[in-house]
Structure formats: C-alpha cells, structure tokens
Image (cartoon, rainbow, N blue to C red; front, top):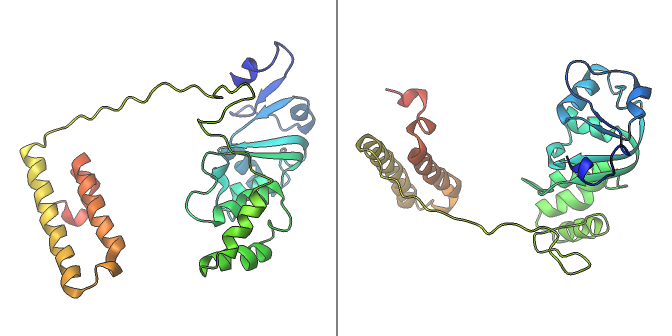
Length: 239
C-alpha cells in the first residue's frame, strides 16, 4: 500500500517473495525494483543453502530491515542471514533499536557493516566490557558511533514547513473498574497472604534489597491473578 501511495502507477515493479510457489531464479528475482519477504523466509533459505541462498546470490542496491530489532541476537541464524547479504546500501528501521541490553546494538552494526565495530573483539574490549564495569567511556563511545548513523523521528518532529510529520488523533483513555467474583477474590486473597509471608521473611532476614527481583515477581503474580488465575497456577497448585 505504501509503495502505491508514494509512487506513480506502473513505475515500480514489486515481488512479494512468500508462499509455496516461490521461484529460485536469482535473475528473475533481481529483475524487480522491490522485493518483499519475511525474516522467516530469509532464515529458512539461508539454512537450506548454507549461506548461498537465492537472496545471497544477488547484489542488491539497498536492503531495508523493517522492525530491525528482530535481529537483536547476533548469534542466531536469522541475524547471520542478514549480515551476509550483499548490497550497496543498508537501512535499519525500528522503534526500539535497544530492547534488552546494549549488545542489541551490536547486531545492527553487524548488519550495517560498520567497521571496526561489527568486529566482536573491538566491541567487547572498548564498549561491552567498559559498560558492564560501569566505565562511562563505553556509553560515550557508542553515542559517538551512532550519532552519524542514526536518524530519529518522533511524533513531535516537524517538516520544513513546520508541520508535524505525523498527525495522530488525541489519546482516549478509559478506566473501567471491574469487581472480582467471590471465587476470584478468595483466590487473590490466598495468593496475597502467601506472598506476604515470603515478603515478611525477606524483611526479617534483612535481605529486602537482595531479593528485589523476587519481590517484583510477587507483585507480578498478583497482577496476573487479576487477569486470570491460570496465569499463576503451576501444576503443583492445580488441586
């Protein structure tokens, strides 16, 4: 739909490479202006042909990874399949380039072929280890690396005419309070009492801060219980 919106009719040829009747003719695929596929299809082709898939036999002009955080784990076959693609230009589109850990950024730099930072030895020595040891130079360096590479757009970003690049409708927040049934309330109360016993033990031992993650999990279970008891019931609790 976006291709049709931003191009003149019959000016851009598009191939959606998905489904069971896919061609393996690299020349036929390369004849299209735009080829759309999924990470799953790319990964499957990469595994089957040991890095010599139909995608890897084409010298692409531009490769764009949508939802690029999908390759955040650089050791996976899916990530490696993107690293080994041949192209003149590479783009990553994502709203969350860093999801769980700093190492997520390393995978994006590997895809972008940003030397020497796509080399694990460099990344580990000058960024990862300093960051893990609390040395601010690790974060300072990654900011310097990303500054010329990253283009950030927010809902407050405006175009040359001063207009917002994206007009969003106002947020409509509705809070609906629900009453628990008697059975739900009994289950919640029982879980609360068991959680409180465990919390009181942490307090008595003077180990509240040491069990911060465990306390957060207790609160999580109580929230899950409000959605459905099955979310917190193990096999041992099923009786």
